[in-house]
Image (cartoon, rainbow, N blue to C red; front, side):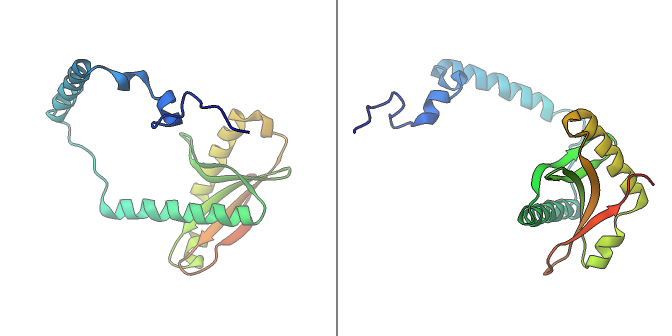
Length: 174
């Protein structure tokens, strides 16, 4: 059976139907809109505020962290966990990975260092308190998970090594 041609079977494809209306302005209107936006950016560029740029070391550390979190998430999925959220931030702290397995909710802190021992010692008591506070914030925002069992794990990442998953790395009652 042959399908009938659909209105979006033109050369633009399906995306053309869902394109925002502002992209189809007449050429005169486009020029006026561009002049308005360039006037705004020209005024912002002349302000006396210096722009913040991250140092190369900071950028490298951020990329290492994102890569380590991706490796840790893949490792957890291979172990049967379902990743609910990555990089959940609150004013109190950050949760690197939030995973679920059956009736268990796991808050995972990912540490990437030159060796697994260095990574293990990098989870300080102060950081543990920030992770616990962030977990409380997440549970307040998601009350449907309040009845789940909770666990705080650490995932240690080192170059040329498999990730090491420390179950119940720290306890929220301390």
